[in-house]
Length: 89
Image 1 (cartoon, rainbow, N blue to C red):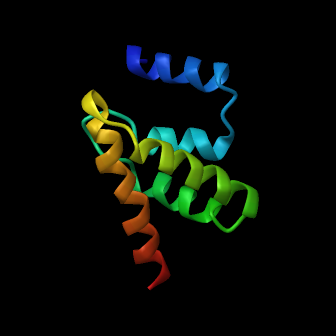
Image 2 (cartoon, rainbow, N blue to C red; image 1 turned 180 degrees about the vertical axis):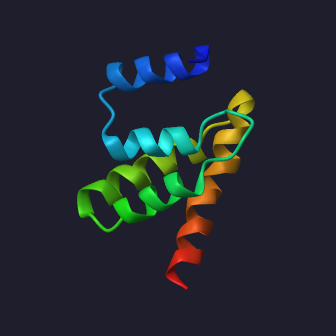
């Protein structure tokens, strides 16, 4: 396990993030590779639940407002939107 993955797990526990928020954090991480399509599908499926939808959108909004060294968060926030659009077609 990498240091960044361990740090992410600790933050998830400390901030008491839900399963939906953890998946969004994983999908929009600063890792140089993109999220898997299976993770993106899981996030898209979560949006059909009212509570999970609010959690997903809240975390996406938070990530969208990041800046500086977290530029990948902003870039990767667009991935769930485009992925959910391809699923709905």
